[in-house]
Image 1 (tube, rainbow, N blue to C red):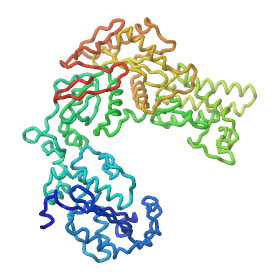
Image 2: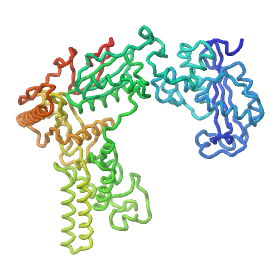
Image 3: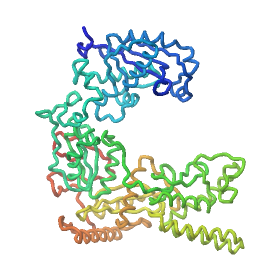
Image 4: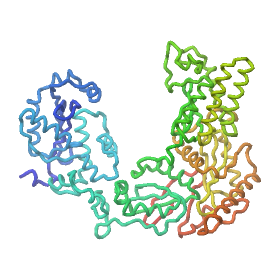
Length: 631
């Protein structure tokens, strides 16, 4: 029977992988080839061989593949290997991962030795994954195998990669057979020349087994009618309940519906998951900041394929941080707060100004100017020769002396006020001391430093204070009503948050949060790595909302002080809403400004549940296509 007339389910496949010398064009030569025979969904015969090359291998290729020059020098010539490969291709479908590359390498090798290319039908497992696993973003062979539960022990060797590719083919073969019955249909399905519009269309056939479409082949759109217009997060799920995408907005209904606008659905980002979405869930919050924090937690917990990465709201914000768990710690500028035992100062606006500030502090206190890795030198660096570094790189410096200088520098930013005044006051005190000691050159040098620091600090935006320095309570308001989310920031961490409770519960949770504070006067604090994103989110939001209500928790506030704080915040919010908006009623704010987390939503019959105490963000799957409530 002609190969192209055979049913796909009974065909035999030759899965191949090639390794080359890493050169392009006509200089590309085959160094190793591996092949695996696949039939009936199982792996059968295996074959591999090294191939001699006419040009020497580059060192990078030898390190990557483990194939040395001595190995290819002792390998058979292409003239003795390629006829065997040609015989194995007869009557079989050629399969490879990134098949155009392997086919080109083999065809070029055949033409170079004068052997006719057999021209077998070719299938590509990368294209197969793109067709039947549209939500799998990473399609490298190793990543695809791991996503399918296939263990990969060896990579970048021909037979090992061919076996991995063969197992990927067997794992996806049922889905391929569900969309193609013959070999020509499979080739056409995976052809790169097929129009992409068909893949974006909502009328396309589902590639996943068991997915049922509505009459006419259309996936039903999620129901947005009962989604609230409050801030919060929304989750799109497929028909089986798997989470596809988590998003946040100050208006859940408007933002969730926008994903299905024609312009969005036509984009490459929307086409990845919107065509599979049939259920939308939500959780309302009282504020934009609550939605930001909850979205971050849900993405980390659920890892939906539609969320490629957590995008920073403002990439211009940076932090000055110091890791205290390394020898002779350094100050550095980074876009993220530090994890582990460290101190983080910021957020600050202006990377170049922050870097210059770090250089000024290093010179004033004799701290290291080099990177985290401490080099060993026989002679002081240029900074050391100028007296602007203690030169721990020489190996003879007392660590206690360096740490004393470092602590003196860091304590300028752990006070109750902004560190700008403390830094300038320190430089002024040093200048006066140098003048009293008649060290006039140093006094003049410090005066120049002081003038430059004043300019840098005046232009540097943000908060020049350690994130753990001031335990505080923050109230984030609803964009349309006098309702709040409350956040407890203690020891540089977001230790608790949720809807504003009654005054008694607010006092109790405040005292519980303060129990997690560090010892008074501690230079640094410990922030777990998984909480770094929340620190960045909250600090970034506060930097962009300087008028947000905040109450410092030193000393710990009593109930009366908390009540006054809440009343003042509610009154200010009500006044702002009355002056800027007439579309939403303002909730009267008493001394406690209570919010009932179990009350009914204002615009939907569904219960609007906010984050609870110790919120673990546990979601319940909705059984229908209606917007469901998260519990």
